[in-house]
Image 1 (cartoon, rainbow, N blue to C red):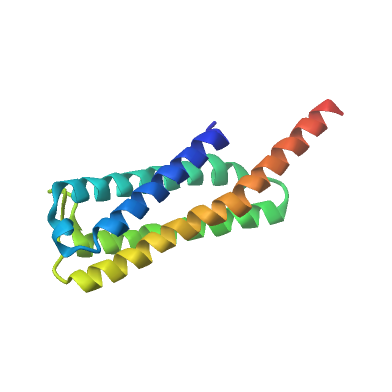
Image 2: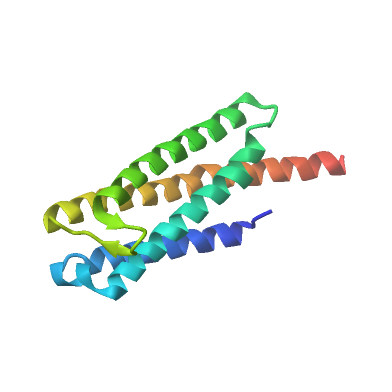
Length: 150
């Protein structure tokens, strides 16, 4: 089972990569550098890994919980993940070649705008995890420990 420290570490890394990438791409010339490209693909890798981990280990665990409110929370996160994956996939098809590990920035202004939107979507998801999902799991874990002690 993944720890909250590991999840927070992943969230921090994704946020850091996002902030640096968004700063770099303000300058059109930076979009064509190998460093910026590497940073972009590191970000996409980290986001995919994190979403999969949260979906499988956290939401997967909650979906079978007897409390319907807990199940509903898990379902909301899973449906949010599906939507993020769909939007992220479309964004990647538009702006990069994953096979060749390169960005395809044809319209810089549009690229920056869509990248800001996509990255905001990911960062909002991380915020929802931190504010809603993690505390719920902590409460359930504490309740389970109290039930075992009783």
